[in-house]
Length: 144
Image: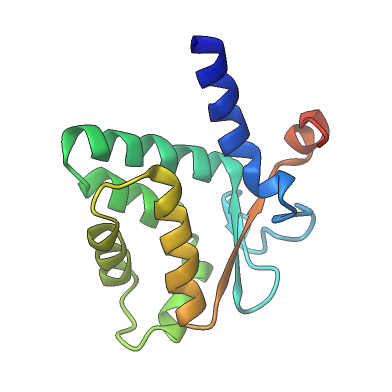
């Protein structure tokens, strides 16, 4: 039972890569912070370590009912460059308000639905979200 749950957890973490949503990490970190990069002006590259942290925070938010840390972790996952880029696409120009509305709309549902909602909301403002693996992790990832 535990092994099945762990396998499912690993599969969920790798799902974006297995479904072809993973981009090559080369050149995606333009501001040098090691977290995120922008491949083009409208695409957010979210590295898997940031995805993992957001997943952990979302799980804790579901259990405890407190979404403040989730909001903080989501904001922390964005580089200054990406925050500026998102702000230019938002009518309000406020990324923190955007993330707060997103988390409130999610209302502590399924963790995967948070990422689906994030992709949907970004698409509504003309942006997309993609996932990246560091080179070492990409080479160790199982092939479908």
